[in-house]
Image: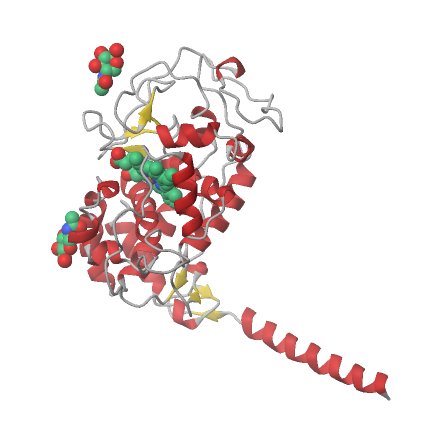
Length: 355
Ligand code: HEM
Ligand SMILES: *[C@@H]1O[C@H](CO)[C@@H](O)[C@H](O)[C@H]1NC(C)=O
Ligand SMILES: *[C@@H]1O[C@H](CO)[C@@H](O)[C@H](O)[C@H]1NC(C)=O
């Protein structure tokens, strides 16, 4: 009898969980034809098209896509798990631009906020939804990127984030990791987020050379930046926040280099080299966290995010470089020994157009 009751309870529980699963996986076909998990997401499909057209030149991984991703970080990181630091991924950087753009760490961000503002207004989204949807779309335009999650339904921001929440390239590894921890991120997640620097260039670290990329393949979301930050530098790099770079036309951020060499993060950094799958998985997971900092009760509208082009070619040393040029800092595991070198003379990396 006790057994009979237990079976009954189990079958009721099973039925309930099946119903819950059916509700979760129920698909909706929108009036515009796309299929999504939730009818509330339907209105986003035309907005995604509009953002592609009006902000990303029809779907490119260019300057606007890169800086939309940077903007999502600078917006969201204004948050502490201990409270008292701002609303997180709330779009405050767009609405309270006169406050937040004055912070030193937000140098150069005004280009993308000014570009986004009129498009943001056209869409009718809240600033938080707009900033983080634009980042997911812009990232999806870059071959090799994971398809980022998009959670929908942020309320309007209440106040600007305070200053000194965004890490600077001149900061020590200790202070950078402490800031990430304060916002809820482990060292592994911090390194994962820095995958973003594979589609990144600097305008203000050295204002005389705007659009200087951090790796030789700035238009693809590959692991090249994790390799090139480890290459011994011999060229220009005398501004605060940078170290000598291995390639002409390239910039090595001091913070990226320091993180690649620090005993707390060196192996996390090295693990990413030529491991596209690991980078995609870890970046996607860390971005999913970043995108909802300080937010609650959101609807999963990830279905509206474009599917990025797959990249499955191994990375290579830039021409003339080899294993001998790598500043290996991870002691626990060997540096990957299967990386080929591009043929020819050392390249000069071209600046990102439109910077
Ligand atoms: C230790 C933490 C970080 C530091 C110190 C840092 C620093 C910088 C600096 C100095 C620049 C160049 C700005 C300029 O001169 O124009 C930059 C660009 C960029 N950062 Fe970071 N960053 C960090 C983390 C992140 C994270 C977590 C993300 C995104 C998830 C991100 C995304 C980007 C992108 C996409 C760019 C390129 C923007 C463009 O090309 O227009 N960064 N970062
Ligand atoms: C700042 O916000 C205002 C609206 O309040 C907007 O018109 C302007 O373009 C924004 N500027 C920048 C640099 O983001
Ligand atoms: C880079 O280095 C070259 C050679 O030393 C020098 O002529 C040039 O002015 C430097 N450029 C910058 C922006 O520092």
